[in-house]
Amino acid sequence: MDSRAILAELPRLRRYARAMLRDRAAADDLVQDTLERAWSRLAQWRSGSDLRAWLFSIMHNLRVDQLRRPGLPTDSIDDAAHEVATRPTQTDKLEVMDIAAALQLLPDEQREILLLVALEEMSYAEISASLNIPLGTVMSRLSRGRERLRLLMAGDMPGGALRLVR
Image 1 (cartoon, rainbow, N blue to C red):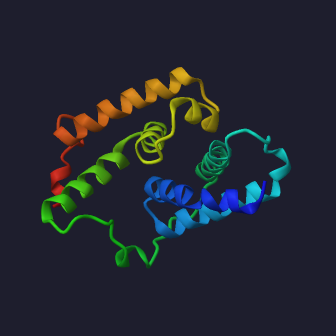
Image 2: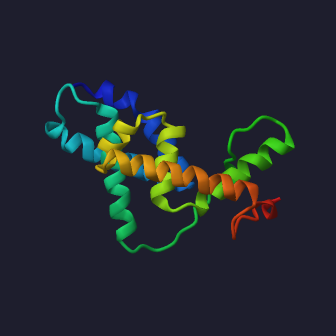
């Protein structure tokens, strides 16, 4: 395999990391760490297997390691300069803000599955392989995450008053 195949997956890795972390600098660091680990362990990749699933698996494992490791909370100075791309209507921006806030209220394992399905359009089997969890667990977490997100967006859950963001 050549480096072009890995570089072709870069936009997907970056998009997923940014959606998951909501911090551009931390997401870029996670993508860089993922690429570094993939490159150093290139001999472990099985030719003919799904490169995207392998890279997402590496990213997932690195993220789990980050969460286990205590760290100092930091704020990126670039966060205020970057906004989520939306259509130029006020309500659209508010809806995106509501969804982003609701996603952050979900447990990590549910948010992770939702983002891989909705944002990365990965199949359940690819997610199962990437996260090294059973297919049934993927479907269960997705179902619970969708339901919880629906309730949060409808304001039917405690802590679901997302309209306060406005």
